[in-house]
Structure formats: structure tokens, C-alpha cells
Length: 169
Image 1 (cartoon, rainbow, N blue to C red):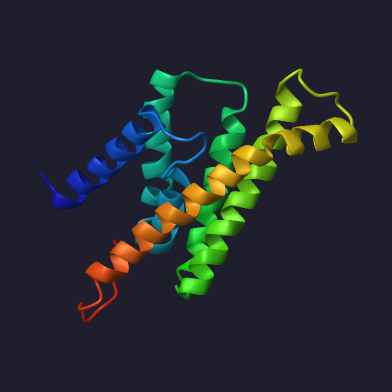
Image 2: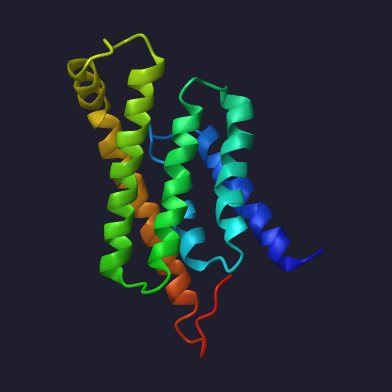
């Protein structure tokens, strides 16, 4: 079997399993994988497939919910940020991209919660309530994105630091 395929399958299962074991809410490697895939996968379809398959596999166990489309959209935009990032991968740009991905995910998923849950009135004030309620989750998401992004991008850079060519995956 193809080494690349085995590696991708291992990554998918590792991310899915991480979502299933006890962890801080919203601290997950999914966004970091989406960002990394966008930046480094030469086949951009894989940049979308890897995090989405991990999400889908774990969602089959965790359960589906009304805001899933917003969650998946947030990660799709994170892949797009990674694709933008691939032109010039630096520590500053990777960090800024991880923060931007966290902010976008926060804005999109809390908009989704406001739109689909009956917890908040369908007013501007209700939307602001949804965003305020999501702040503790944003902090965890940002922490997770920064840590996992550092591990993925830093690990890749370390492994390839002695490589004469910087090819994609």
C-alpha cells in the first residue's frame, strides 16, 4: 500500500480519535490540520478531505447537530487560509493565519448557533449574546489552534530543515 495513503489515513484517524478522548472544549487539531493541509498538500483536494473525514468519522460517534454546516464551513475557510499561506510560510504568517482561522471559526459558528438554536432572540442583541456566550470556547479554540499549528508546522520544518528542497506533501 502507498506510504502517502497510509500516512494520510493515520492522520485522519488520529484527529478523529483526539476529538473522542476527553479534552478541553474546542481544543482540537482539526483547524491546524486544515491550515497545514492548505499550506503543504500539493493536491488541494486532500487539504479539504483530511480534516473533513476526521470530522465526519468523529461526528458519527459524537453525533450530528444543527450547526455542523457552519463548523465545516469554518474549517473549509481555514484550508483556504492555508492555501494563501503557502506562498510565503514564515513564523509570523503562520501565527497570524492560526489566529485568523480561530477568529473566523468563532464568528461563523456562533452565527450558526444564533441562527439555528432557539437560545437567542433573532435580533442584533441576540447575535451579540451568542458571541459573548462563545468567548470561553474561543479562548480554548485559539489555544488549541496555536499549539497544534506550532506542532504541525514546526515539526514539518524540523524534519525538512536538512532537506535540499521544500516540496509539498
